[in-house]
Length: 92
Image (tube, rainbow, N blue to C red):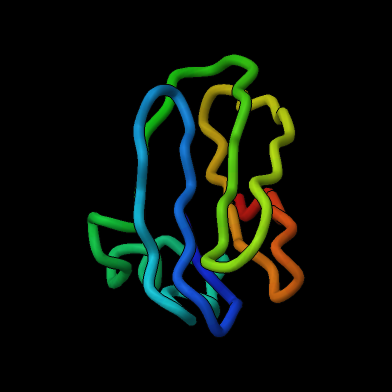
């Protein structure tokens, strides 16, 4: 699940997919299956287990990259922070 906590638009690139997020899109990611179903498909990405490089570009800021690993049967939230930092969160 992807979100943007900043006041600017953001672009997240992961696994050769680019996702554009409006300001404050999905900033209140939650940790339940029921609430996850309410998040638009444009803010979700399914990835097989493995290590991924994620790049974040917030309007008016420099691009930032980091790596994280996804295991089978995990759900993660990737939140573009207010300072242009990508915040991965294991939700469940």
